Length: 231
Image (cartoon, rainbow, N blue to C red; front, side, top):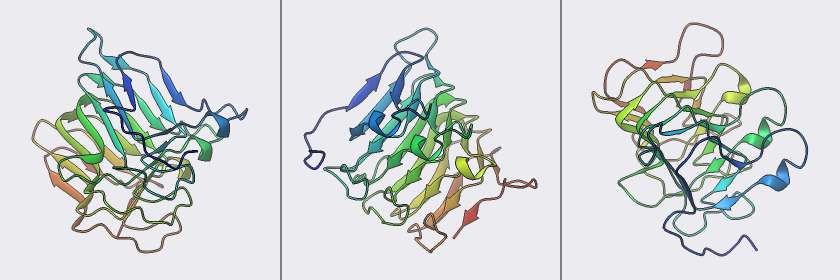
């Protein structure tokens, strides 16, 4: 029914490369390709070349079938262990970009983010709703941090310069985005809406829009589309 939680340790665990979880965004049956799942882990520790070029798109992670109500413990997405060049969200090619959006919300613990990037490189997070429902305005409470980068999180891209690549990250109890540790650097955060809903209405995070505990990262930019809305 998509309305009752049946717990797993991990809903989906990826230990390989070139897998697709959700839609391919080819404009054919994209909506029907959606998964409703509580958690996803991409872990490259088990392979010499790591876990690469996986795509996670168009899913409801941590919510029920409506995308506007937390289900069970809510979402947990973990990309770690030499996981590189994976895409979470849209490729912004103009085909089904909105249907490639993941809704990721509702995690209830205080140790992880809703989305965690750890010991990984070159992953892209684009066009997702984090902390708000599928309608872009309904807050799904409970999350501590929206996106948490730590433990060697390097050269990740959060957002982009087009409207399709914009992540909405709002309603977290602590930070919208946190980058922690001197081994996490070279990360780019551009074009996102942080602390507002998809319509631009205030939906603040509890303490920080973006919390930086590291050096050498880029927040915003001078070119069109590179600035973040942080409220």
